[in-house]
Image 1 (cartoon, rainbow, N blue to C red):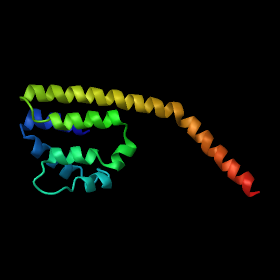
Image 2: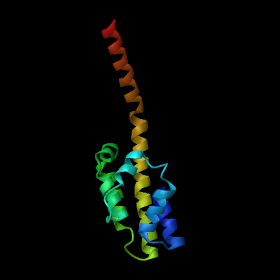
Image 3: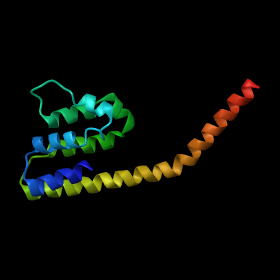
Image 4: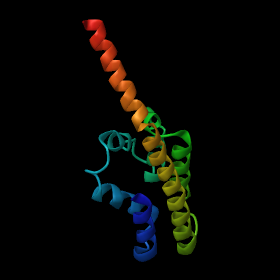
Length: 133
């Protein structure tokens, strides 16, 4: 998880934000979806933090995440590097708990509606089959 990686790098390696984000992207490049990697390819002279904030505005990301999730990620990335080590690790802890709450809510909604979407898919398939017969 990106936030855990940031917290660890801030606490133990005392690296600046640019180095932390660049090393995360380099270390996890294959795990990042292609569209995120493409969206991070913005013109030179733009900080990595700004690139990530811009990538979060991508229509592809907006389609897959709720606006509140994007706002949470944007706020986290924008606030990195502001303060001392203790405040930065506390910030990482705060955003990790916020994102874990959102993840739990998303999983709950997925469980709640999975059966409905499956049933709708089956009914649509049956309707198409009946129309073809």
